Amino acid sequence: MALICPTVLAETPESFAEQIGKVAFAPRIQIDVSDGEFAPNKTINLNQLYFNDGQATDLHLMIKRPAQWLEAAIALGPNLIVLHAEAEIDFLKLSEHIRRFGIKVGVAILPDTTVESVAEPIRASDHVLIFGGHLGFMGGAADLAQLKKVAEIRAINHDVEIGWDGGAKLDNIKQIAAAGVDVINAGSAITKSDNPEAAYTALTELL
Image (cartoon, rainbow, N blue to C red; front, side):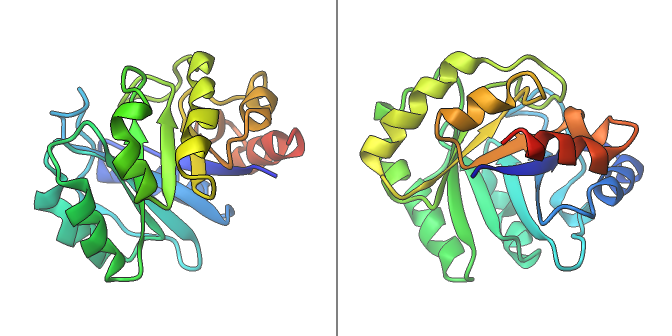
Protein backbone atom coordinates (compact mmCIF):
# COMPACT_ATOMS: atom_id res chain seq x y z
CA MET A 1 0.00 0.00 0.00
CA ALA A 2 1.18 3.51 -0.78
CA LEU A 3 2.33 5.76 2.04
CA ILE A 4 1.13 9.34 2.53
CA CYS A 5 4.07 11.61 3.32
CA PRO A 6 3.20 15.15 4.51
CA THR A 7 5.38 17.83 2.94
CA VAL A 8 6.77 20.96 4.57
CA LEU A 9 7.80 23.97 2.49
CA ALA A 10 8.50 27.15 4.45
CA GLU A 11 9.97 30.53 3.57
CA THR A 12 10.47 31.67 7.17
CA PRO A 13 11.55 29.99 10.42
CA GLU A 14 8.15 30.85 11.91
CA SER A 15 6.29 29.14 9.07
CA PHE A 16 8.60 26.13 9.31
CA ALA A 17 7.97 25.74 13.05
CA GLU A 18 4.22 25.94 12.47
CA GLN A 19 4.21 23.41 9.62
CA ILE A 20 6.54 20.84 11.16
CA GLY A 21 4.51 21.00 14.35
CA LYS A 22 1.33 20.30 12.42
CA VAL A 23 2.71 17.04 10.95
CA ALA A 24 4.47 15.66 14.03
CA PHE A 25 1.99 12.75 14.08
CA ALA A 26 3.14 11.29 10.72
CA PRO A 27 5.70 8.45 10.62
CA ARG A 28 7.47 10.03 7.64
CA ILE A 29 7.58 13.54 6.18
CA GLN A 30 9.39 15.42 3.43
CA ILE A 31 10.97 18.84 3.84
CA ASP A 32 11.47 20.85 0.65
CA VAL A 33 14.42 23.23 0.48
CA SER A 34 14.79 25.71 -2.37
CA ASP A 35 17.63 28.11 -3.19
CA GLY A 36 15.50 30.58 -5.14
CA GLU A 37 17.52 29.81 -8.26
CA PHE A 38 16.59 26.26 -9.25
CA ALA A 39 13.01 26.95 -8.15
CA PRO A 40 11.56 30.49 -8.29
CA ASN A 41 10.93 30.87 -4.57
CA LYS A 42 13.44 30.64 -1.71
CA THR A 43 12.79 28.64 1.43
CA ILE A 44 14.66 28.74 4.72
CA ASN A 45 18.19 27.35 4.58
CA LEU A 46 19.28 23.88 5.61
CA ASN A 47 21.03 25.32 8.66
CA GLN A 48 17.66 26.61 9.90
CA LEU A 49 15.98 23.19 9.82
CA TYR A 50 15.35 20.70 12.61
CA PHE A 51 13.52 17.39 12.72
CA ASN A 52 10.81 15.97 14.94
CA ASP A 53 12.10 13.23 17.26
CA GLY A 54 11.40 9.69 16.06
CA GLN A 55 10.12 10.77 12.65
CA ALA A 56 11.70 9.63 9.38
CA THR A 57 12.47 12.83 7.46
CA ASP A 58 13.29 13.11 3.76
CA LEU A 59 15.06 16.16 2.34
CA HIS A 60 14.09 17.27 -1.17
CA LEU A 61 16.79 19.65 -2.38
CA MET A 62 15.44 22.00 -5.04
CA ILE A 63 18.91 23.46 -5.34
CA LYS A 64 20.88 24.20 -8.51
CA ARG A 65 24.28 23.34 -7.01
CA PRO A 66 23.50 20.97 -4.12
CA ALA A 67 27.13 19.96 -3.57
CA GLN A 68 27.62 23.29 -1.78
CA TRP A 69 24.98 22.34 0.80
CA LEU A 70 25.49 18.61 0.96
CA GLU A 71 27.42 18.50 4.24
CA ALA A 72 24.73 20.56 5.97
CA ALA A 73 22.09 18.16 4.65
CA ILE A 74 24.05 15.10 5.79
CA ALA A 75 24.62 16.59 9.25
CA LEU A 76 20.86 16.69 9.81
CA GLY A 77 20.75 12.90 9.55
CA PRO A 78 17.75 12.51 7.21
CA ASN A 79 16.20 9.24 6.08
CA LEU A 80 16.66 10.22 2.43
CA ILE A 81 18.24 13.03 0.41
CA VAL A 82 16.58 13.71 -2.96
CA LEU A 83 18.65 15.52 -5.60
CA HIS A 84 17.26 16.83 -8.87
CA ALA A 85 18.44 15.22 -12.08
CA GLU A 86 18.32 18.68 -13.67
CA ALA A 87 20.67 20.28 -11.12
CA GLU A 88 24.36 20.92 -11.73
CA ILE A 89 25.68 17.73 -10.15
CA ASP A 90 27.71 14.60 -10.62
CA PHE A 91 24.87 12.45 -9.32
CA LEU A 92 26.82 9.21 -8.96
CA LYS A 93 29.65 10.90 -7.06
CA LEU A 94 27.29 12.68 -4.67
CA SER A 95 25.14 9.60 -4.12
CA GLU A 96 28.17 7.52 -3.17
CA HIS A 97 29.20 10.19 -0.67
CA ILE A 98 25.74 10.39 0.89
CA ARG A 99 25.50 6.62 1.36
CA ARG A 100 28.73 6.58 3.38
CA PHE A 101 26.67 8.16 6.17
CA GLY A 102 23.91 5.56 6.05
CA ILE A 103 21.52 7.90 4.24
CA LYS A 104 19.44 6.81 1.25
CA VAL A 105 19.61 8.69 -2.05
CA GLY A 106 16.85 9.74 -4.40
CA VAL A 107 16.61 11.45 -7.76
CA ALA A 108 13.78 13.84 -8.64
CA ILE A 109 12.66 14.37 -12.23
CA LEU A 110 10.72 17.37 -13.48
CA PRO A 111 7.81 17.00 -15.96
CA ASP A 112 9.89 17.82 -19.05
CA THR A 113 12.65 15.37 -18.11
CA THR A 114 12.33 11.97 -19.76
CA VAL A 115 12.97 8.81 -17.78
CA GLU A 116 15.30 7.49 -20.47
CA SER A 117 17.55 10.54 -20.20
CA VAL A 118 18.21 9.90 -16.49
CA ALA A 119 18.44 6.11 -16.57
CA GLU A 120 21.86 6.04 -14.90
CA PRO A 121 20.81 8.04 -11.80
CA ILE A 122 17.63 5.94 -11.57
CA ARG A 123 19.69 2.74 -11.48
CA ALA A 124 21.83 4.24 -8.71
CA SER A 125 18.92 5.48 -6.57
CA ASP A 126 16.92 4.15 -3.66
CA HIS A 127 14.03 6.47 -4.51
CA VAL A 128 12.79 8.22 -7.66
CA LEU A 129 10.57 11.26 -7.13
CA ILE A 130 8.22 12.01 -10.02
CA PHE A 131 7.38 15.69 -9.98
CA GLY A 132 3.89 16.43 -11.20
CA GLY A 133 3.30 19.90 -9.81
CA HIS A 134 4.60 23.47 -9.84
CA LEU A 135 8.14 23.43 -8.51
CA GLY A 136 8.58 25.32 -5.28
CA PHE A 137 4.90 25.92 -4.54
CA MET A 138 2.09 24.10 -2.75
CA GLY A 139 -1.52 23.80 -3.78
CA GLY A 140 -1.20 23.48 -7.55
CA ALA A 141 -2.90 21.01 -9.85
CA ALA A 142 -1.43 17.56 -10.38
CA ASP A 143 -0.19 16.69 -13.87
CA LEU A 144 -1.40 13.09 -13.82
CA ALA A 145 0.07 12.46 -17.28
CA GLN A 146 3.38 12.11 -15.43
CA LEU A 147 2.13 8.82 -13.97
CA LYS A 148 3.21 7.10 -17.20
CA LYS A 149 6.75 7.42 -15.86
CA VAL A 150 6.09 4.84 -13.14
CA ALA A 151 6.25 1.88 -15.55
CA GLU A 152 9.25 3.39 -17.34
CA ILE A 153 11.12 3.73 -14.03
CA ARG A 154 10.26 0.15 -13.00
CA ALA A 155 11.69 -1.09 -16.29
CA ILE A 156 15.04 0.47 -15.35
CA ASN A 157 15.09 -0.24 -11.59
CA HIS A 158 12.38 -2.69 -10.59
CA ASP A 159 12.93 -2.45 -6.84
CA VAL A 160 13.32 1.32 -6.47
CA GLU A 161 10.88 3.22 -4.26
CA ILE A 162 8.82 5.62 -6.38
CA GLY A 163 7.49 8.89 -4.98
CA TRP A 164 5.02 11.47 -6.28
CA ASP A 165 5.14 15.19 -5.57
CA GLY A 166 2.55 17.69 -6.75
CA GLY A 167 -1.15 18.31 -6.27
CA ALA A 168 -2.07 15.13 -4.41
CA LYS A 169 -5.52 15.42 -2.81
CA LEU A 170 -8.67 13.46 -2.04
CA ASP A 171 -9.96 13.41 -5.61
CA ASN A 172 -6.81 11.99 -7.23
CA ILE A 173 -5.02 10.03 -4.49
CA LYS A 174 -6.49 6.69 -5.60
CA GLN A 175 -5.35 7.22 -9.19
CA ILE A 176 -1.83 8.12 -8.10
CA ALA A 177 -1.58 5.05 -5.87
CA ALA A 178 -3.11 2.74 -8.49
CA ALA A 179 -0.36 3.75 -10.94
CA GLY A 180 2.18 2.07 -8.65
CA VAL A 181 3.50 5.01 -6.64
CA ASP A 182 4.90 3.96 -3.24
CA VAL A 183 5.15 7.33 -1.46
CA ILE A 184 2.69 10.15 -2.13
CA ASN A 185 3.82 13.53 -0.86
CA ALA A 186 0.96 15.79 0.18
CA GLY A 187 1.55 19.42 1.07
CA SER A 188 -1.34 21.87 1.17
CA ALA A 189 -3.93 19.09 1.43
CA ILE A 190 -2.54 18.46 4.92
CA THR A 191 -0.62 21.49 6.24
CA LYS A 192 -3.26 24.01 5.11
CA SER A 193 -6.09 21.96 6.54
CA ASP A 194 -7.90 23.05 9.72
CA ASN A 195 -7.15 19.56 11.07
CA PRO A 196 -3.95 18.19 9.49
CA GLU A 197 -4.12 14.82 11.22
CA ALA A 198 -7.73 14.28 10.10
CA ALA A 199 -6.77 15.28 6.55
CA TYR A 200 -3.87 12.81 6.63
CA THR A 201 -6.18 10.06 7.88
CA ALA A 202 -8.77 10.81 5.19
CA LEU A 203 -6.11 10.49 2.46
CA THR A 204 -4.70 7.31 3.98
CA GLU A 205 -8.12 5.66 4.24
CA LEU A 206 -8.58 6.02 0.47
CA LEU A 207 -5.53 3.87 -0.25
